[in-house]
Structures are given as structure tokens and as C-alpha cells.
Image (tube, rainbow, N blue to C red; front, side, top):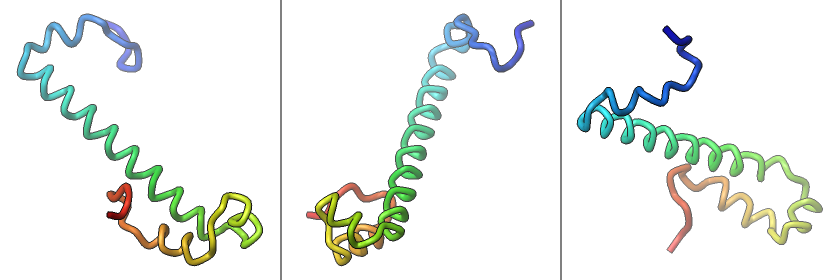
Length: 78
């Protein structure tokens, strides 16, 4: 039996269509969660930048605050 950390190429075909679909959905959800987490971290990091650093990236303090206050699940404002 292979250790759990090794990739098993035969695993997905053995699961069957329903379980493979469930696995694909779980992996997609994990991907979304990782994107949300990165977005939240990035928005928090904006608050730590100095005014000079914000100017270097073309943002004002007000824009950085506005971005940091947005919910982590939003990509942009309409």
C-alpha cells in the first residue's frame, strides 16, 4: 500500500463517476477558498503599506482603505 502523501494515479478511475465528481467539486471548493484567503491577506497587507509605498503602486490611502474594507469574496465593485 502506498503512503497517503504519494499520488495514486489509479485512485480517480476506481472511485467511479459519482465519487470522482464529488472529488472534483471538493477540489474546486478548495481552490476557491485559497483564492479567498489570498485576497483577504492581500487586502490586509495594503493597510500595512506606507503612503510612499502606496504611491509607488499608484494608490492613495483612501483607495487602500476602501479595498481593505471590501469582503474577501468580492473581486471588484460595479
